[in-house]
Every structure is written in C-alpha cells, then in structure tokens.
Length: 130
Image (tube, rainbow, N blue to C red; front, side):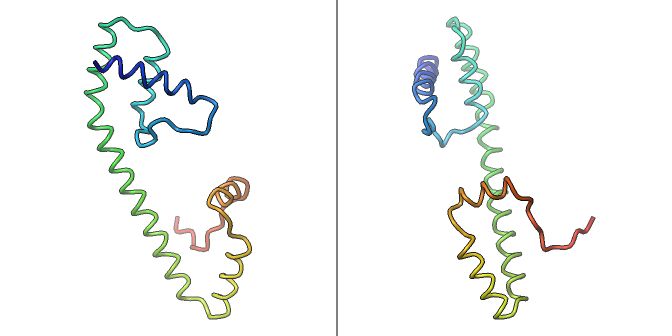
C-alpha cells in the first residue's frame, strides 16, 4: 500500500529534521513536496488513494524533466570548461603560471568557493554581447 509508504517516508523525514542528512537524496524532486504536504495532515484512505493516483500521474514527467535538467547542467559545465581551456590557450606561459598560483592560493574546497561567490560578484572576462 503506497499510503503506508508515504507515511513511513514522512516519519523518516521528520526524524531527520534539524540534521544535515538528506532522506532519499536521489529523489530530491517536487514529488517530495507533495509527500511532505500530505504527511502534514491526516488523510482519509480515500484521500491517500487520490494522492497516490495524482503522484503516479506526475512522477514520470517529473523524472523525465529532472533527467533533462541534469543533462543540460552537464552540457553547461562542459561548455564552461571548454571556454576556460580556450581562454587559457591564449595566455602566455607566465600568465598560466600566475593563474596556477592564484588557483593554488585562492582555491579551496567547492563549498568555500561557493560561499565566496555568494559574497563577491562574479567577474566575467568575456565581452558583453547584448
């Protein structure tokens, strides 16, 4: 019975509240919002059945769009990497050494770079083509 699964997932999520753990992180989708919503109130068996039916109706398209989004994100990262390689190919050996040193000194973990990007505006070296 899916309603029972929904209730168990809601209880597991509630137990993880306030921790850094993510329940079922592979399923970080909008469907989780519906599960949280239905777990927040007591549903009759008819309402649970209706919610399960609605969930089944949307799960395929949501998964498909999530896969599409992940694919586009991967393409974006690949294009950004290609752009950086092309820019680096225009630099002199001295400039490349400076860039490496800058990355070594100012690098750090991904989380650190992410926090820095939130506090500093990103500088682009590509011309504005608008």
